[in-house]
Image (cartoon, rainbow, N blue to C red; front, side, top):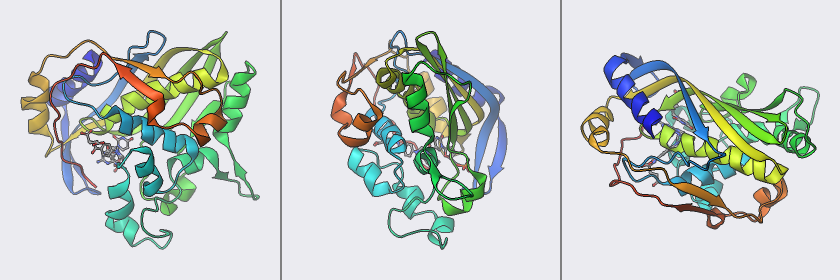
Length: 283
Ligand SMILES: Nc1nc(=O)c2c([nH]1)NC[C@@H]1CN(c3ccc(C(=O)N[C@@H](CCC(=O)O)C(=O)O)cc3)CN21
Ligand SMILES: O=c1ccn([C@H]2C[C@H](O)[C@@H](COP(=O)(O)O)O2)c(=O)[nH]1
């Protein structure tokens, strides 16, 4: 929690105002942030200075794991987070690749599970990683990349958290996650939970112990219409001690994650938090 608050304060104290053409808004911005989550100690990085909707964050990650490309599938899991980008983003609505209501196109999980090969067929990056790690193999290239510039024109948004790189040291699994662009009041609240949960889940299904997760952010920003709420409300609150996450131990394989897992298989305990804050969302 402290590292999140430190980043918010750093943006407010030292950030530069940058015009963003896509959203038409200014963002107070800093470059480079490194966050660490202690998954081995189950210190769940849930924001306590406002109510955080952690189930939606995990649902979004589960949708990526399943390779979903449709906001309706995300809604069914419990995340409404892709509705606006799929259905209200004018550039995407005008795009001939959009297949209709709720289509997100070739983003995130589609790339992770079905990256198109130039010579035909697709690559399932996640399955290869899970198969290798389960056998105790780390080929120093256990990389899940959603970043496919050749297909940016076929999706509603470029991935923000674009690469997850797994590593094994003995039987301990580590994760380095890379994010190019971060909406700190809204997105990071979710992204912290997602990096933590991704390591916990992949460790569980490959039979490894989770170690630490390292989260690298490049452009970290607060939109102009979010600033007052962050500075004058959220940052005036005292944080509570961290919550912990429990995952149904019956989840044992990638197939389990693909088929029957729901948000009922995740529980958070000791989550003490301040009141919710409704931050403006920029499409
Ligand atoms: N401007 C912007 N910021 C983002 O964080 C973001 C995007 N766009 N586009 C793609 C995804 C969608 N994400 C989202 C979208 C909505 C919320 C959101 O509204 N969160 C609220 C309520 C969540 C709920 O009720 O389930 C929150 O208070 O956290 C969070 C992340 C993260 N990403
Ligand atoms: O997981 C996510 C997804 C998106 N965001 C934020 C970061 C930016 O504010 C927007 C994306 O806009 P770009 O113009 O494509 O950078 O969404 C996030 O924080 N986390």
